[in-house]
Amino acid sequence: MIPVKSSHETNANGSIATGRDCSMGAHAQRWRRELLQAVTDVALLLRLVDVHPSEIETATGDLTELRDFPLRVPRPYIARMRRGDPKDPLLRQVLPTTPETEPAKGYGLDPLDESDAVVDAGLLKKYHGRALIIATGSCAVHCRYCFRRHFAYVDHRQDSSFPSVAALRRDPTIREVILSGGDPLMLTDAHLGRLLAAVGSVDHVERIRIHTRLPVVIPQRVTPALTEILANMRQRVVVVLHFNHPNEIDGDCARSLADLDRFTLLNQSVLLHGVNDDADALFELSERLFDAGVLPYYLHMPDAVAGTAHFDVSERRALALHRQLQARLPGYLVPRLVREVPGGTAKELVVADG
Image (cartoon, rainbow, N blue to C red; front, side, top):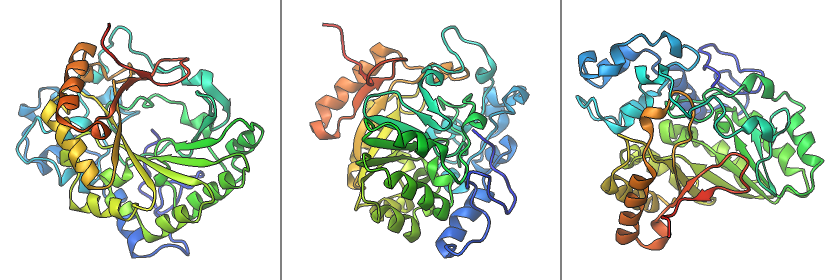
């Protein structure tokens, strides 16, 4: 991910919305302030959660090799971590650790061969009828398991002419557009509105999907201006969220999701060792998501990206957990257990042999 700037300027692609524009109000000021105050120092994070470095075996090593993907975590997310618990599932998702620097067989920089899916700068097409726009390379949080942590965002910058939309316009087979990144909600409301207007002007696009973790880590990002922009789209809007653990859903998150209730809300989780590879946690996550108006959709096997092997969950373990969910939840609350296969025509369901 592109590191967040702590200045009062926006990036060339419109992200890191810390400047003043005509759409800026109290809501916008709040989420931008939270963004600027995100924690980027490991020692400070551990102090805030009352965990001594000696309790985190892997946090005491030399993490200089991670300077291209440093710690970044907003304070509203830190507030949901359990104090004094070095194994807190939210802390584990964001704390840089020395295993990230250790090579692992089968783990690479581009595990999904996304470079082969590039159609034009900022536009990827993996599956029939769908295309993905890299709206920005920036994120509010650096999730340690991120499958795009090594992605060459510099090659996909979007200027005001939106070259990805020009490429999109040339392919009438594309009916659905996915805004991804980075996190598309890192764009200012004004810039996001211009991008959505450009995508919306393409006649053959019928649906727009926005993949985001910002409502999870900074719920205040869901502003009246944002919901108005989405509500004014001609196309059907689907917001795909990324909650991994029930402890991520607090009152602020629930309120922000309620403000998005006019749109289709789906959740995609990643199955992570030491975070949510537990039937009770996954059960509670589905229940809380549905209470908040979100449908559990996917439970992803982790992608084999370099630096993430310590999050791996075996297929046998994943299937056992999924069977437990099927036994405890109604079918519509059981997320599909999937993996992404490089070059595949769709995500692959993970099922038991026979």
